[in-house]
Image (cartoon, rainbow, N blue to C red):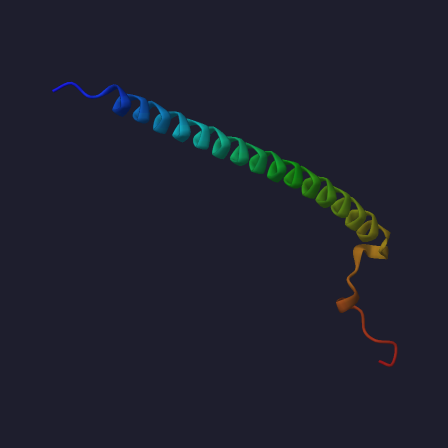
Length: 75
């Protein structure tokens, strides 16, 4: 028995709605991934800067000594 024209029209509308929803979802996911990538890059830049600062401080310590290796002045 052939399907009625109204049934096919409803199916097409339903498929178009699903496609629109999926396109919207994909766009939101793409936006989220792009934002996360931007945040990762910013964090990498901050880490590089902190490592550079740490190395400068480390090299400024005479004999590369650590504070925990030194005896307090009262000994």
